[in-house]
Amino acid sequence: MNTENQRLDAAKLARQLGASETLAIINDDSKNSSIQEILEAADQEVGREKLMSTILESDHPFWALGALRYLSDLGEYDSKLREKANLVFLPSANESARAANNNGLNLQSINTFEMYLSCGGGYVANFTMYYFTPPFSNAWTKSKIYSGNKVPVCQSQTMACDLFTNSDAPLQPGDTVMLVLGIGGGPDTPSNIWFTYDPTAKYTAQIDCSGGTLTPTFSWSVKGNG
Image 1 (tube, rainbow, N blue to C red):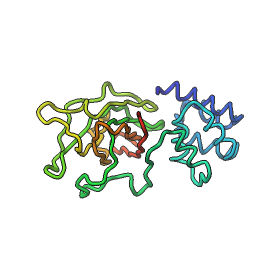
Image 2 (image 1 turned 135 degrees about the horizontal axis):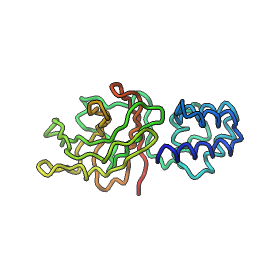
Image 3 (image 1 turned 180 degrees about the vertical axis):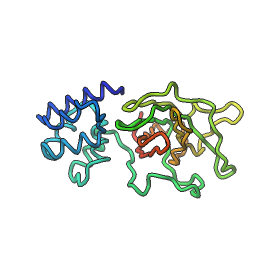
């Protein structure tokens, strides 16, 4: 989704809510407000019940994912938002990064990566993928392929894992895979969030990228793609 479309969708949501203060935040181009800032403002302005009912009735599941990620104490709305977002897994904060000593065991299976550059971030980027075959190898194979041209914040790129395979070291089912961010004007940065590649999984790992050129940060979720 491109920046302008996301702003238009956010403005539509604010108008549905009758949230004039939130709409003013969205329309302030100088701030490039994030989904978190927009949702928190709307939550405070119109209240939880009205915000949740509007999100659940909308055509845009990323608002449901945003609410799950950034609003606390969702109570009865939690399961409805997860269904709306087609969410399989959303980790807690202490699960966001995978420790390097886990040897690729007990990881969520996926067949696709989606890189989302969060609004308010400070760079343009594309992505590539690293992979290795446990337990016989723990050295990452670096894909020679990137997801396309670098895109600005508020946009995403999606690419199946098997499209990153190197001919001299093919990706195998069961390999451990990781998205690596290709930042414009900065170094390639591993997300350090690991998954298991399964071509039959029909799950997408969405990696949300924020922060600055030299200090990117990552959060993630898994959603169905079947």
